[in-house]
Length: 179
Ligand SMILES: [Cu+2]
Image 1: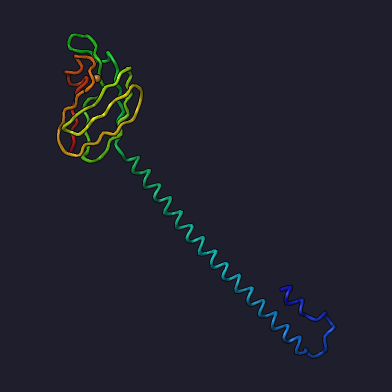
Image 2: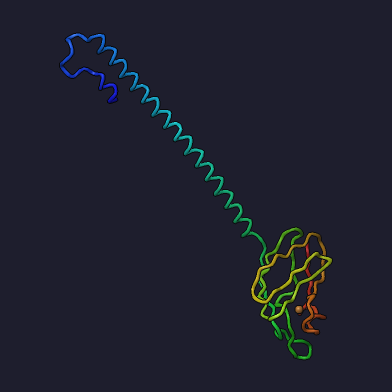
């Protein structure tokens, strides 16, 4: 605007009727004004477009993250522990055992298994037929139990430990049923 005004003659200095110079300067001012409004309009349109795109990107991003967290939340979970001399045998003596030895899973659907191994040695949940080999380290860790075919599969602890427990269901043996 100031560029247009700069070409204006000082107020009161012009002749009573508009001179050709003054008309030309007013035309120039209108052109500048029009150009400025056009520029503002284009910038505003770009701004709206960017904000619409940003909004839709954010929405997709949020929806994706929510979808992912829903998937994690809906995953099956099981918690158990393994402790030495924790389960009585037929003679009243206590033997090493998992607190849970029978598991039911859906074929192809992973189960998050959190096992607190209170022993100071490694044990395992091993079933060659089921394709399962979970090495249970001392401490609390989360493992994935995944069976890819239907069936009832016996598992054993593959690491030499309590001899009674290694040979008995409910101690260091159990079943995984996949449906
Ligand atoms: Cu064992």
